[in-house]
Length: 169
Image (cartoon, rainbow, N blue to C red; front, side, top):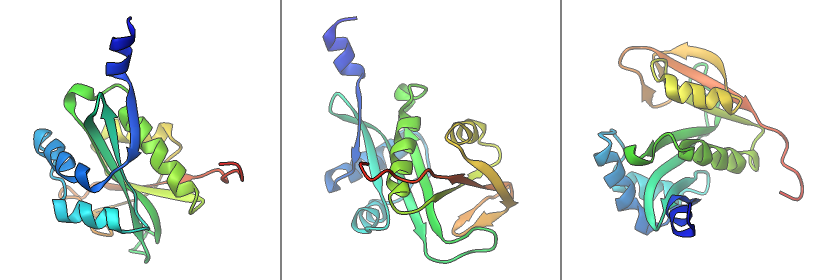
């Protein structure tokens, strides 16, 4: 494989900037994902308790992911840092981008807390497998957690205990 081919395949994960918001919205439209509005992503960028990342390949944004912070409990879902939405362009799926975005979010959360939370529809087996691989385990089942509602009532609350961040991290 030549150098140019490697360069085209290399993925860079970075914090999103305002110029990325429209790209994120377009990814959601391209994948038929019911994502947020440009205003909601701008609010995420402005919130120091949240993180918005993009995955870039050859200068193009091919995926994104975010975190949420809840300052209050909601039933079995405690206050804390949660992994939020994650979307990767279909042409870039199954290449480790979702895992890379999730690991970066977990590193960011680890600097702030010793636990990360995640909610998912029980039918989303690909996402559940990815997150189990990252250390998440089932805590509760419900039809909603915080503002996430599951039309079929099959929501899962998952938790990962995070290792203590090293002082050199």
